[in-house]
Image (cartoon, rainbow, N blue to C red):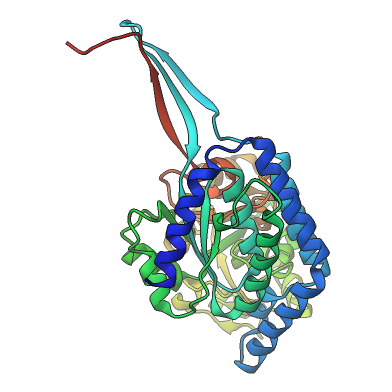
Length: 415
């Protein structure tokens, strides 16, 4: 039997146990896991250094190495994410609706776990902890398949958490890590109908499209982030500068970072040159339209391929537009429906943008970097869904639940 099938079966057995646990028992286990991560920081960092060294030797980009890297501060943040989940209400068992039928039937709609969740992701070991924390809180078992770039980090993290779970009510088999780094292990997961209840991909567009196109197991699609910020004619110059810089530079390797800056022609005439210098100071390469290059002569000419690229790097597209209509048209053409922002003092334009832009998160006068489960108050997140069925946007605890109808009768039969 393959590793993938064997571990999915073990997760299924553990899932049946999870369904009978109380919120207190699940919280106790998550707190134990959080403390264990903090207590074993050095071991995690040592394993992570092995991954980073291999990444450097393989020529991995600096932005991807940033996603991979763990340090004391990041590990403390990951542990805090588990504690945030503990502090959140447990959705399992929540009554969503009660129906009293004329024939006396009492129908109750309740939240229940999804079951066994398959999580496929790339070089971000923090996702390992976020995913298992959210799954365990909602009574789901999880089968983790991280990228080969983070294999040593993920092994150590799961080992530490397994040991922590042994002293709690949650069986260690509720968390499974697939260590086979061949693509065949991903493809096998995608076909495990009856063993996996859902697959959630989290990573670049090629990974996500492989999962979406080839899975027979149901998929919750998380999307790539070609995010735009539009600086309207009335935008406050300081606010616009702060938001644009934050959206691109604060952490360019993540999916909610800005990839294209759209600038109204009036704002560009007054402020784009100065704004471009701020990006230059931050070591950001600018790729601009012809109008942009007249104001910023060191910008590279942007192509349609550039506008359709999620860089996850210190590269930014800039396009000058005539008005809001042109900005909306550009976003409609190139957006991945993740996160989009308008900076404006004109309320009517803000309302049009918020209403007309089709995205999971739409901002007025705030950085797209806030599209995040932690920032939305969900604790950790299992991903940011850009689809429209079941869940959309940052996916916290409720997104990892399904529903069940429970019907009480007194002998009713259907005539």
